[in-house]
Image (cartoon, rainbow, N blue to C red; front, side):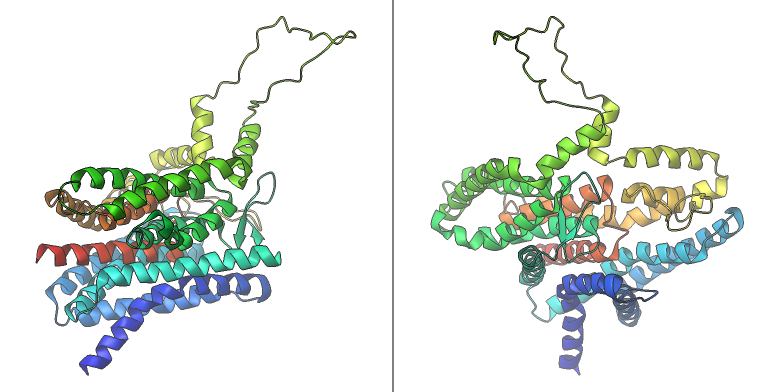
Length: 465
């Protein structure tokens, strides 16, 4: 019975590896099968139900599980209040869209608490949570990289942009989501590499990192490029600090090699940057904003002499608004719109939220309603002050605990594992804040839920040593 239960728990956890395959099947179902819902939606809804059932089952014998179940029950109550409020306040009220949104939002919280209980149980029975985290994320990263490479070689990759910009998404339908996923996975591929690099010639251990980085560059987004730079800088600076801290106490060949390899890769990245889609896309975005940094052509007279322009050459100046647009890709305009709606909304909506897409008008056909696509802003305006604080509470509490553990045990905790998993969390949160499609996208939030839960379990285990 114990062995059977252990296998079931492992099977539930291993589901994380199947995410890229589910995303590819989702693309196929969208493009080639006329169904009201995609394969991905059906599979992830089933998994949500399984994880909810696991939490209820665990609550029969675990005090922690009872607390987690109580929290989720309170969350369900807030959603009921939100639904009832907006049903009577909003006109029109698009029920299918509203209910779909609730499902996406609860996904992170249910899976986070489910993974927390699951990984704790597996750890008690001898499973190495660190290896589990690295191996599962590495397998997912390799699958994604393979899809990007094969789709490019065969010329079957989907494009990431409709016009003016360049980028590809492989066989993944949602560019923003696959970009966020790759950014979260990338630090774990670097972690795999740094633990196996003892000499500079061991640079072959960085192949999974390089393959995923190439895929991220192909995407053509600022998120992808920025993620690569941040991870390489984290390894470079982290190696330098570890080098100094452990200079007189331990062998540092591994640290020194990682320092030089990350430096070499940063130089290579800088060298290829002008040839990447994101480089051209930045200039395309500047053109859209009416900014042109190219020098005007030199004019010559009939004798071949250069005609000097008497007017003082003015370099284009980027305003604060233009810089904001460059960073947030017009999302700041949606924030302003939601701010106005929120101020005009009745008090009950300010407390419990305006639901999906605010107080909308009936949209035109084939023109879907728009969220801000900045997850924390969407949480706040959709669930109000009370709902937002309730949803943030577990993230702040558990992330805070993890940070306190890290700080309390420095310099022991200042190692590659804590540096790179911390970078992965920060990238996930940062993307969630600036570009969205993380905490309200089940395809992405499952990675964040697994990562945060694994770090909590690993931290507790370290405290007991």
